[in-house]
Image (cartoon, helix red, strand yellow):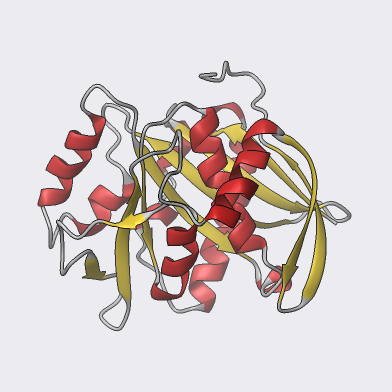
Length: 234
């Protein structure tokens, strides 16, 4: 069984380190060494919330993701990632942050041990659910081609105003990344109806159990989106 929990980065440095080590190992397996979301300066960022996946038996960290809220002095990973080729990203983030709460879902990864078990799709849904519980208005993501449809089903829309209709060469010359954003985190009006219902189940029931189906069968998961040591914006 897998266990998924959430914490604010500054409240649990040890778990941050375990998350970062696992993420770095997966990126190295794919020959990727320069990804802004894998930098560790987020450890002391009060606007970062970490969703971590652990093997309930071994305690090993086998996956996770993060939400970075717009925070003074802490550019979003998407800003650092594509600003070299697209400086309009700064104005775009500022536009979404104007009197509203925006941020980014980033650093989503899973170890090979749980690949094909449907955990990445669940993490995407839980990330959007967490953004809703944090009262965020919008949420950015920069993702690989094979995860675009998964993100779109969760309510993200391709941000065609930047890059080549929303796409960029990143993090290597032979890889393409797509910038997307959920513009309506509260209502998720653009999400696939099935995904939308599931996401709102996690919003309304932030702690419980679920079963996911992947190419390698079913996996039972205990999840907890409730935050300790921090007052949620709900």
